[in-house]
Length: 197
Image (tube, rainbow, N blue to C red; front, side):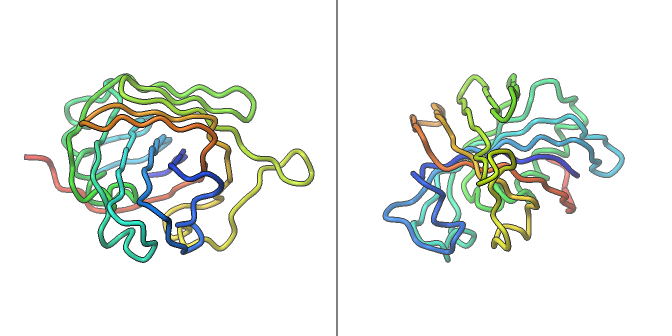
């Protein structure tokens, strides 16, 4: 599947995990996957929007994938029953945010909105919201990018953003952040999915 990834975390300044550095305390992450085209088996999943929210257990960069964290998965409520049978296990088994989602607190099918005005993106759902703007470079036009990042295994063309705000309230977690780290990148992922039982 191919699409665009929008991510914000709790870091002020760009997240130290991108540079292989530890944090003073564990981080939190709000991620939207906009699937532009793709199939799981014969099921078309183009147009699906999905959000992972992760409360990461460790503050150590080296433990990010090993220890992961807990959180919820939110998929737009316009998906069909057939799509849902494949999407949930696919996200939990193959998607980068899902790889660090070690304890699944639940899946909800909700109204997810993504709007864009110039270089600013606004993402909202009933349990959370974020607004981020691409950070332009020295030419005042093109976005700043992360080159040769550890995360390029999963994501391409990683662009730096300022997250004006993001908030989340579900599964006993109630967070609100202002002026935090943000990223927009492209993904082209493949994997095997088991149907949910």
